[in-house]
Length: 234
Ligand code: HEC
Image (tube, rainbow, N blue to C red; front, side, top):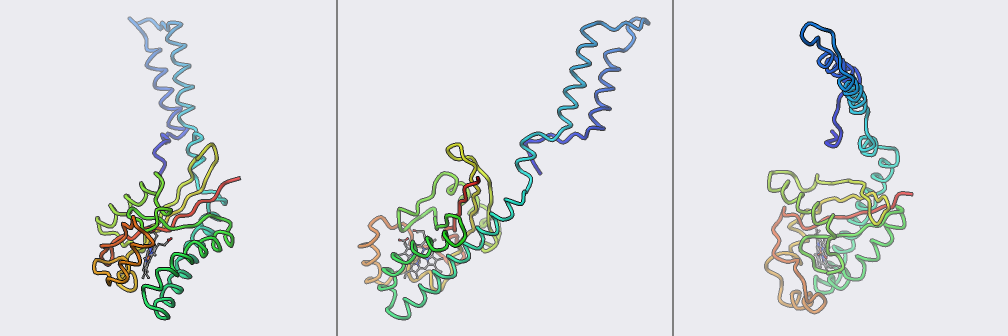
């Protein structure tokens, strides 16, 4: 549904216009007198209803287009690629060197994998959150609004794994396709580094690399953040 478009079919607007005209041309004191201004008003009614009956530009812009479908497919693929590759590397790094070493791995590979996936799918993909570890991942106004909306939906019972959002917005005069997909907090392995009881050596390493870290204290199932994708429209 498009809230910006008043849906009146041409047939209904014609009928409304006709009844408006009849109203204006109603016999006055038994005479069939129609004033000039009444007739002009009638013509304006006809034009107004014809206009309302036509789908406006807003309606057309919000209809799904083939470009939307291909952008959505690319965005989903980039988010999935980033999520799966990162998680596999993270688990491997913890297994190989323990969580303290894995923090450094995550720090260097997360941006590199994001860059790879961006190039592979001709988009820009990254991660963001309301509470971030790396300030470079802080949300912009759009991302904050969508993250807050995800939180509201989760609080109302939605499954965080199913939440995604797409929108085509205008940024600096350019049309930009935007996509976000919620990242739930899993008990394993996420809580090791994002939970409430971090191992002291791990906590110290995170503090050293991320002095402004806000990304601890999470519970399983809580929204940890989101994948965020942008694609400029030509
Ligand atoms: C070994 C520790 C470690 C584990 C385990 C871990 N993370 Fe992180 N996480 C980090 C680090 C370090 C960063 C900052 C990365 C950077 O500099 O971009 C981070 C950043 C993030 C971000 C980006 C937003 C931000 O806060 O900067 C998200 C989202 C995230 N992690 C989700 C998860 C999820 C979901 C899991 C479980 C699947 C997980 N993490 C497991 C260490 C970890």
